[in-house]
Image 1 (cartoon, rainbow, N blue to C red):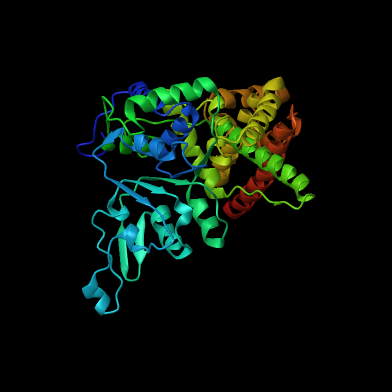
Image 2 (cartoon, rainbow, N blue to C red):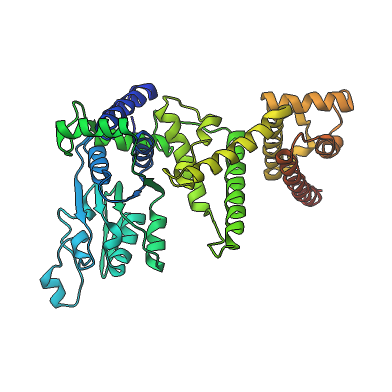
Length: 438
């Protein structure tokens, strides 16, 4: 078991049930917010932050505090932001003796710096100076102020706001919140009836759950998701990884096309997904698999990446991501597209093996393993060339395989172009090393 004294997890299914029960309990308390609760659990599992935006009085504070109340053994910091506040509201009061010597040192006890969870209400009411000071704590989990450099156990912050304030600092702040949601008032009479029922019982207060999840257990789940656990692994296949990146790129294209149309009306014209956000979405995929009790990521998990690339609660954003997912999925599902992607990606691994050790080209290609995909390659070799070829035919076979490969869709065709470039680069390395050896 990774981590001495760590709370034991017997199975992924056990974890999924525990989280499902917790989400159900919150859903009974905060009505009609199931999707945002799932998004919040994804934020907790990936140790990221969540921003909730809505008009006043729709239960942002209740949602955040009820979510954090599901865990035991974790400290929570709560504050309502205001323009008058200084960084010491979040980092602790200044040490006056150190200040006399010109050094800024905060007494971090009971502050956000020493907390596991944080809830910041009306975060955009804080002044830019204070928000700028928060950036490193939210991102690097360190207090960096003056001569002070302190590591923080901060796991997840949920912030709430009634509005967005645009400035250079707030744009940087928004980037620290990987998950974003907008809570729209629901005027459906039955939903309002259920909310009223809950209010009559609990008067808008958080409720102590019958069972809490140990915070150490949440940290262990995070280690599983980020590949740091020795006892459990959640895997993502190569073809699914490639598929994910195509979906993300297509969504980015669709968003920018929509913004281009909006530019004619004088609105913003650029939507950009950073490589950092794209990489973190892989943790989200593994979190989604864990929530479903699986140790392997499936294609339908990719359909929920709008949790990070769109704003939950905005139907148009979500619909656009689902359109990107459906378009790419349907294209690759038709005529063995996914199979072709897997074959080409496995072929690139074969080329990488040769590039790292060019002397292997002097030996029969059949030595390079016996996976299902590589068997497909060698079946093609026998069909094309007959029996095993002499060693000097290896290059010809590799190049002919790519030449004869007929993509079934645009996504595979683009991948084939990349494979052609990798093959050419590999053969240059092989030729150089062979000449050197001779």
